[in-house]
Image 1 (cartoon, one colour):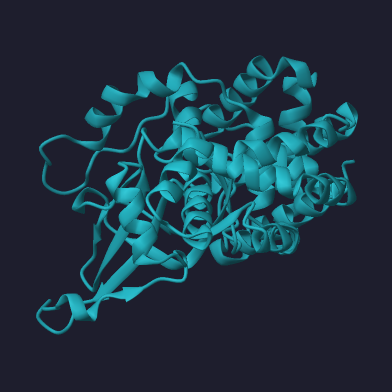
Image 2 (cartoon, one colour):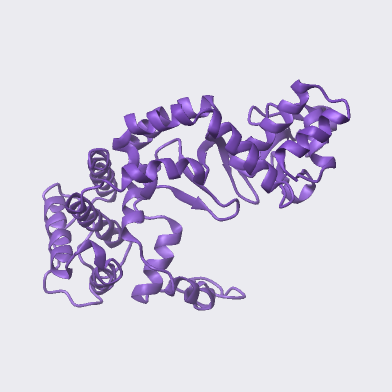
Length: 378
């Protein structure tokens, strides 16, 4: 059913224009977020609560009437399937269904069309953010949406890319020290690593995602997204898993239609600047992995994989290794690590950590510098 037909049916049943518009706007929101926490209950001592304890969230500003309309058309699902039960609270989500997706997409496209001139001019004025927006978005496969955190995490490499790296360089988790579990981490890894071995190690995305996790980038992104949020072209939603909701760690959810507006600006990126940016990111990545116990041989193998799977960048193995070696030497002067282990073999550490806290601070500083460069690439 088209959006126009849906709205026409509601009018024919006696719903006012205000109600029809509210329902349409709620659909547009659901297209952006896919699932929205509409209410929660704080559990009292002992875990007891009643329906009177339920509180609405600020993420779902729509009426119960709008919810009833969407539910009875089968456009949303608010069943316990989408409820997140935590030790201290229950979070109730309203989720867009496959049936509701086409009409919700049309509702969002209508919203975007009404703001298209503004959005195009706004993106053009903030073209310096284009590479970060286009290449640096993380992706939530559960809701199929790109997102950016609204607070810095200083993440050098995320869980997905870490698994791709480990699969490519032949690194597996260490076996448990204590009693044997039903399956060890190594056994479980053997079962799933094939999924990651077939993935390309996209170092450009990894570099910009890491830059996007910094304080420098987050402040710029928050400022950029705020006017778009006022028009509800993007939404700010809490991060959540199947067992927890994190309202203190919110994410900007960005639909693909908006990212398409950024693509032309991102394509103006100077290849030479991109190459140098990625090269320096790889040095920081290798430094961070070295701190986490990766051997010299594993890091050198990583350099080989990056060169092999990102040929369009024109990187060389020697320059990646030399960049890493130079960063180790620079960091060693601050006393947080030793100098580079030049004669060490593949199983040797690339360096020794002398002050982990100082090294963590140094890595964060390196990431902040990379983020500043990411904002000046176009």
